[in-house]
Length: 201
Image (cartoon, rainbow, N blue to C red; front, side, top):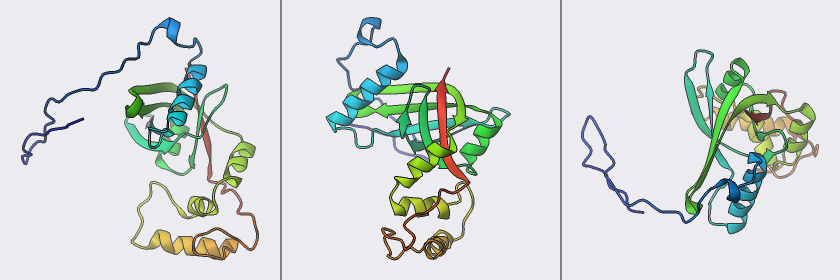
């Protein structure tokens, strides 16, 4: 697809008309499952198996402050169960603080390569501590260390995160620079980290 923009000026940048892609799919009640979650599972499986979407699990999650000011960011979708869609994050992050104060969210998937998008609006709930710990234990050690070292949505000085990461490595006995082996064998799940489930309305 060719994109064109007008010559940028100090006060604006404008996207010019361009050719749009066209999909041969036609969505009707007869071609979709009556259960939105079942339909999502089918579509997501198709996208993963097609191997044409670089990161199909990437989704935009939008939250709001109690006064209704929205905020959006991209996170990685990790699971859908009979209740809803799950992702994991730092509970002290801006998104988590907004979810605690205003327990509703919207998420959106966009799979351009297969001409499909999915949007979900729902009420949120924390997943069980046991479920968060089970998922955390399956993450690469580097990602586990990152969860401990990262203070999401906070201002950091240059080199601060790397310094904190080295401290965490020492704390949990990580033996190499890549964070692949430890003396203890287990890095505990941070109390400030866990999963959120968006339950569709």
